[in-house]
Image 1 (cartoon, rainbow, N blue to C red):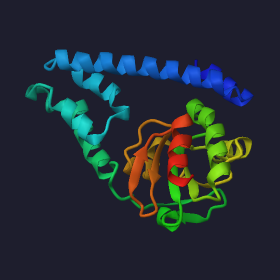
Image 2 (image 1 turned 60 degrees about the vertical axis):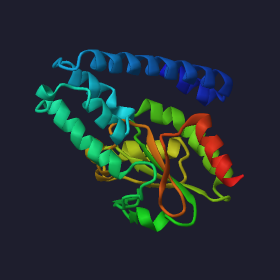
Image 3 (image 1 turned 180 degrees about the horizontal axis):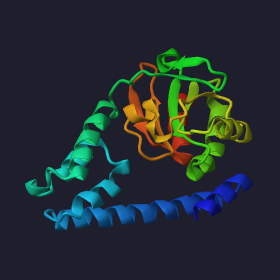
Image 4 (image 1 turned 90 degrees about the vertical axis):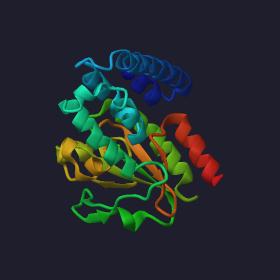
Length: 233
């Protein structure tokens, strides 16, 4: 279905793309709920921390803590439980309403770019992606369209790549026509910026207001266009 989605977007068939995205979201939500129900119904099972970890990718820090509280205290020393507790702390530092965490990484020409240098003039979307990430590449045409329409109205994007191969990164930037600022430390999942923001799945993004406050997270497709339109039209 994801491959079909990429083809629909490449072909410019937004109707079929939107229908397929809705189906994918429904499948994802059903699987998430099934797993959460398992944790609730089996709080003392040694399987539950693993199941909880598998559904934690889109949960906030507060939501993770709430799920952890459902588990039997006998599981507190589980490696998965300790990992999730640490992740909750990280995510709460970058929750909606919190100020951005600054960092510096190099652009494709090797020039250092500091996040704070881009904060203040525009609404800024920090987009975590990679050349090897199919869903990221499928979303890029939407980002390009929104950027081109709103870039002169107060909207900007900073791309943070989780690539490790520089040539693949540069080729994806060119192929997908990503003309906004791009940075990477080419450290794959150990990218320092993504680690600081608790990113463990891509595509992921954060929207900053002009004061550098995180006002939205993980908005894509038509949802992104609607949000930017509300802010700038």
